[in-house]
Image (cartoon, rainbow, N blue to C red; front, side, top):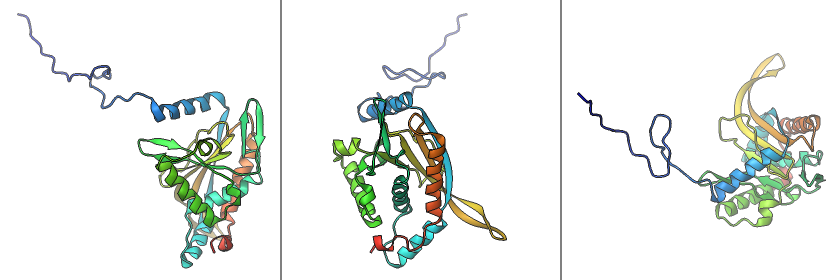
Length: 254
């Protein structure tokens, strides 16, 4: 006797392929529009550059002491803004990282046009430039960054802002990701990733103490920058972070 069977598998949306189990996909989205542009740019970055990433960690005790001092005056800067200010200062000593590489030509800059990676709704991302960031005090930097974020979220960025950065910072500081590998924003030759904070035991005279430590990840184009100067930049940045005086920015927040 012939056995009759019935197909009870769910229907698959037109144009969509089921996975290996036969189940339909949750969602099918064409890679186009702004998401497609981002994808194309990321792929081009990885295919056209020689990217390498160095990782380091910095003790935030000095930064936290500075913020506590500022809280008493009613003007506490965020950890991010303090770190951005120190990144800008450090770049002044490492112009090879504040640079672009186009048409087999490396161009170094005096001015720091600081790119800030800003997430947008729909898992989108932009990295507009904060122009002449080296001229800004810590208080001015905070206000300028907030204004840039607001323009990005409102879709009011200019073409110059979208293409004019010389060095970019990507911040995942609110996550548990301590280190990551940021992708270069070509034609820039370097990008710094700021990771999340971990509590670690650090050496103390006669023992140990608990300290909050932040992860820093520097991706650079090995065609333009070698490993030693890239490591020296991270070392210098960590030293600035860990050696920060509590009153270092009193005059910039007045």
